[in-house]
Amino acid sequence: MFVFDEFIDLDISLSDKTLLLNIETTGLSPRNAFIYLIGMGWQEHHGLQTRCLLAESRMDERKLMEYFHEFLPRFKRILSFGGQSFSWRFMNSRWTNYGDDGDDLFAGSFMEDIQKDMSPYKNALALSDFKKNTVEDFVGFHRQSNISGKDLMAVFAEWERNCDDDSRSQILAHHRDDMCSLLHLCRLSAYTSFWNGNFKQILSWQLKDAHCIFRLLLDTPVIQSLHYRTKHSTIDLNDQEAIINTPVYQGHLKYFFPGPVKDYYYLPAEDQAVHRSVACYVDKAYRKKATAATCYTKKEGIFLPTDNCRIQPLFQEEYHSKEYYILYDPENWRNNPDILNQYLVSCIKELPQ
View 1 (tube, rainbow, N blue to C red):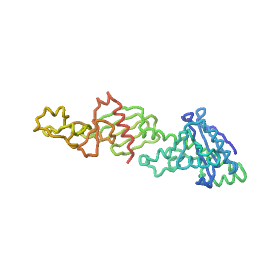
View 2 (cartoon, rainbow, N blue to C red):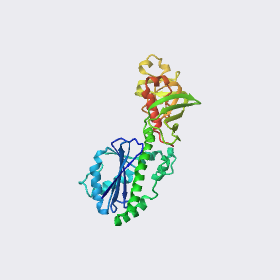
View 3 (tube, rainbow, N blue to C red):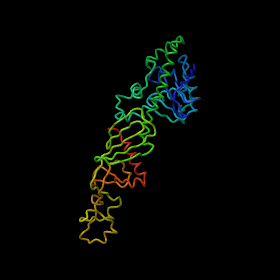
View 4 (cartoon, helix red, strand yellow):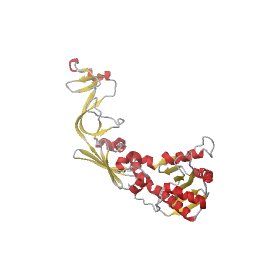
């Protein structure tokens, strides 16, 4: 087994507990293929330190795996592209040949797969697919080596036969690109952080042309501007700002009381329900037992659509209406910012259409 280290002087910002991980294998099935390269990268002295564990022959896989197993505890977060669908599964499967029975190679590590995290947002990103080269183009990363992972297997076969300098150079150039690629792909976390409901602060909101427009400050600037539509809103991400544009409903809506319907009476003349403690003072001719469909009070105002039924109070047009609304209430939002935060997070977490 050979160990090749390289320090790449780049302006990066990784936590000191994050490990970039990539592997190269002789095939897709861990049953009859093996790992011949384990590529790792981490932040050191404000740059990227990379380490390539390269097998001299296929018999070196045990050495690679045992070295990695001993090295891994230095890190808590393992970052890869396609790790869940391939790398982690492949490595764990091969580790069963060398580790203790039932031993999980990555036990205690937080595994983060960039490809998996981004895949629900394919429509927002307007990507044709989530292959690595497609996503690399999106983040503006261009490889120096033109050799593919598939072609690299033939290079390794030549390396295994001769351990020649040319084969080694091609393998290390590919490894270097993989590490730099993962580093660039880390920048996609600005999007996933936002889509998980994270932002720094609410900058402003205003009503304009039957829409409510919210401006938010992002935790981290995004690489490229995005414009996309969700069920209720349009969202624009640009540099360090997000703009959520949501149509409003203006008029009367109904709030249906959550308590037992038997505790309420409906007053037809006033078109609302009241609790029996109040209804007892109303003439029996002007009241009747409320039903689920008439157990409401009405509210006039401006309303915003939502699917988050945990925000209260919620308003509907009718009892069986599937659309829910919250009241546009700036004064309440200023006094209780958590309510507005909760609403905006629910807007952000709606998947792109």
